[in-house]
Length: 447
RNA sequence: GAGGUUGUAGCUCAGCUGGUUAGAGCGUCGGAUUGUGGUUCCGAAGGUCGGGGGUUCGAACCCCCUCAUCCUCCCCA
Image 1 (cartoon, rainbow, N blue to C red):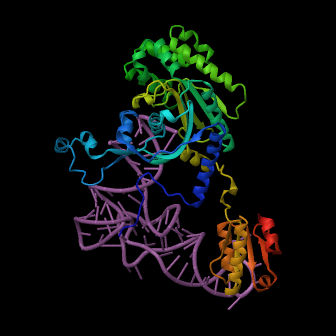
Image 2 (image 1 turned 90 degrees about the vertical axis):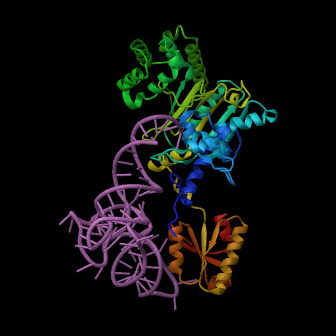
């Protein structure tokens, strides 16, 4: 019998961690609700056909596949098996997989329930997702996303609301962030201005790395991806633009680029109606990988703490199209709860009060007073107060040590005298103050 | 998927070029203290040295495999 262990990239969460995680979830959820989003949950597993092809070749490789039940080799593709062709074999031995994100399952849900939905449909979803990535700092194989998406409207008011949601949630978590915003149409405008619209994706991937590899690195990467020197010069020129307004001349011949500028202008106009607490920054190098984004894109980074993005999102013109329902636009954002946890922990920003669940512990000396303690505890519980009774009557030392370890703020000592008078000896653990109280008075004090 | 790092008590880590019975601090448990904790003192328990195989008279230490960890790339939350 070997020691038990966990699969790579997964974790247990102890009581304190769960309380802290719930603090994050509750905070984000409250903001979602305030903006009119409705809850949705979908299964951990989806049909593999729902998932494959939605995240690019890389994404497909990172999907966890679930082996079919029963005699899965009976129906396996014999040729693929003989040829040891895993990709070909897969379809015949695994028909399900674990969800990779929350957006695709949402799109699937919308298509399946289109007749029942009032559009625009605003939903939020807080659930785990799984990726067979190599775990490292801030990267896990099982992690939670907190998503808010709107489907069925192309109004830019939602882009503004989603930016406000980021701002509000991180304000409540007291975590200073930068909300970066860009627009895929602006990126396409750059490609058009440089005369390389067909290399839009290559260009995007390269300039996304600017803050990581620097201008020289980007130049090199652009060249490696087969983009000519003239085009590279144009791109660099545009990237150096100091403001949105300065881009206008460069996009004189790019209708898409102009559209991108207009969209961002509109979003900023909405946002100017109500000041944000965090910085929102136009970042022309922001690209984001998922290929289905078509309009505004978002990314959130913590200030003062090195961590990959702790949130991201954007607009997609046609996500449900792959499920046979074209023309439904959507926009959404995601919070990376696990990374937010790591950042809050690193910056020591979790509230102290999260670990006080039980308010008081009852301590007794013998069988008779143990009964009395139990009776008192029951009355407090009936009044809605979280209470514990120490399991063994006897030495106070142990009972006090337990209270200290559990961070319980009060201890009630129920001895012979107290039992006869219907009182308890209440001690405040923080101040050391002690007083004799009747049970009703105790309920009044703690309730 | 590619490359590297680390793995010794519950935790953090020592452990010399391979050499008797693998140590420390913290924590845990018991006692000093049978109605008052976080201090102090005394004592105790706790190890398949991540797992498997190999080299050797002898392996925590060297070699191979494997599992896990942390990090970089890729990609992302």
